[in-house]
Amino acid sequence: MSTLAPDTAHELRAARYVIAAGVVAALHVGKLPPALPVLRDVLGISLLQAGFLLSLVQLAGMTLGLLTGLAVQRIGLKRSMVGGLVVLGCASALGGMANGAAWLLATRALEGLGFLWVVLPAPGLVRRLVPPERLNGMLGVWGAYMPLGASLALLLGPSVMQLGAPAWGWRIWWWLLGALAVMLALLVRWRLPADPPRQQPTVPAQQGGAMHFSNRSLLGLTLRSRAVWLMALTFAMYSGQWLAVIGFLPSIYAQAGLPGSSAAWLTAGAAAVNIVGNLAAGRWLGRGAQPYKLLVAGFLAMAGGALLAFGATAHPLLQYTGVLMFSMVGGLIPATLFSLAIRLAPSGNTVSTTVGWVQQLSALGQFAGPPLVAWVAVQAGGWQWTGWVTSVCCAVGLLLAWQIQLVALTRSNGQPSR
Image 1 (cartoon, rainbow, N blue to C red):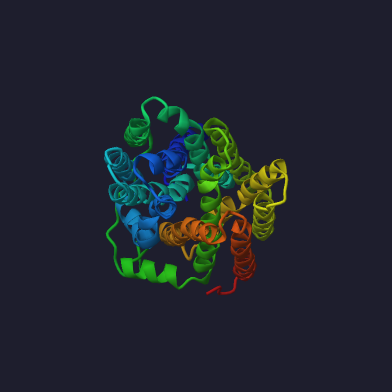
Image 2: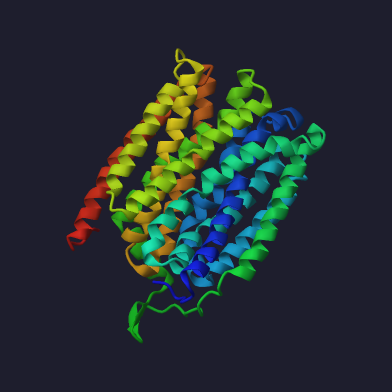
């Protein structure tokens, strides 16, 4: 329930700064793929190290998602987002000074911490700022923050890196994005309404008409929820394969002999069409579509698209069509899960911890996905088995989506779902 009462136009303007913060955070995740060919030449990064560079930004989310969600709930949503943007900016500036893989890996892990502090408060901020009748649509927009940021990074990165010699171009790219994160931190601080007064945690008790919870009870309530676990695992099945496929596309196209500009446009297009799925999911959910059907459509399209994209005998045009189908229809999944996270959270007090646990297992998927795909590619001597790796993820995702549907039906019937 919103704690603010400005007019709708003002609420939507404020919510757009939240979306912008997510896009800037996603830019830091997506800035690496177009730089990988340069980093492999300049810093001697191996293919396996490249896989860990892609995934290490998820280390904080993989280990601290739930606890960070709890901290966000206590510190305040706006304060957390501002702090996360500052951490992102500083980590990116330090990363631009790296002279080897170890330094770059360390700063990527720090960027992951900042990324987490930006994205975890966002759904709660959107819920606070946006009228209920606009919530599903705006959550669909929020679900597109990652593909929008990634596609912008893939498109702009090569051009920015050409501003200097190969040894310096990627550093300029890192420093520019660091400055952008700090600038947006100032905008969020100035433009978003202040967080409500902080409440001291107590044991669960009815006080003044409101229920208060201790840290332990919030964590317990979240982790005992079957719905939370199912949503988190489903997000992991989606996010790991999406990052692996989109993240390695520039390297795949470079190995195929495509010019850097062509590879950048093709990869950016593949990431950008994911936005379509997110926006469509928000619109359809607002019109009463069943989340289960959207999840099923997303996972089936990802499996079929990846098998087509990496089929050795397919025409290049058909392969790219498969990549587009993989990303675009797969975009139905994140927006649907963000909506479900708010609807199926154990209580209104556990939205941040629910999103935190979803983010934690999503980060685990993103951490494991790229190195796994890279390892399979090394063993197979090419990328032809990638479609089968993603198909296994999709099969698991379909089973989890079915279980989410059962939990949602139980909840709607007023029965206990845990």
